[in-house]
Length: 143
Image 1 (cartoon, helix red, strand yellow):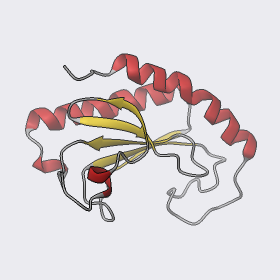
Image 2: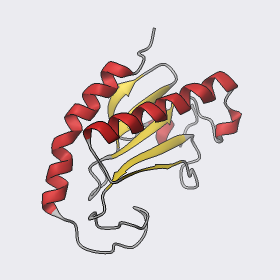
Image 3: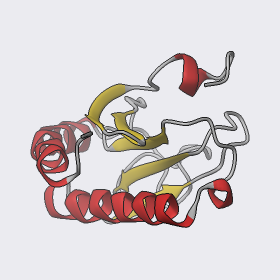
Image 4: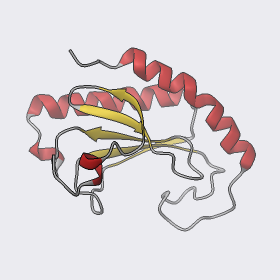
C-alpha cells in the first residue's frame, strides 16, 4: 500500500469481485456503462514487476473478463488498456465498446464523435448484471 495512491487509498469503483491478489470494479464512467477495471491489490507500477505466476493469473483473469463480456454485454469490441500514467498502480481497463457509442472508433478518452445514445446506454446497462454474475461465479475467491 502506498499512501496517496487512489487505488491503494480507495477501491476505484464498485467492487464486483474481490480476490486475494486483485479486484474487479465497475468504474461507472459516464457514457460507458461497460467500463470495468482489474486492479492489482499490491501497489506495483509495472506488469513486468509481477512474478511469472502472478502475471499469468492477471492475464487469465483478463481473458475471463473479456470472454464473459463478449457473451453477456455483446459489444462490438472489447478494449483492454493498462496505461498508468495518471495512476501508477497496476490496473487494466476492460471496456465494452459499441459502434454507436459517443467516441467510437476513438478511445474513450478521445473527443466524442457524436452524442450519447440513451437507448444504447440503457440496453448495455441491462446486460451488466448477467456479466457480473458470471464473473462472481467463474473467478476464484480468496482462500
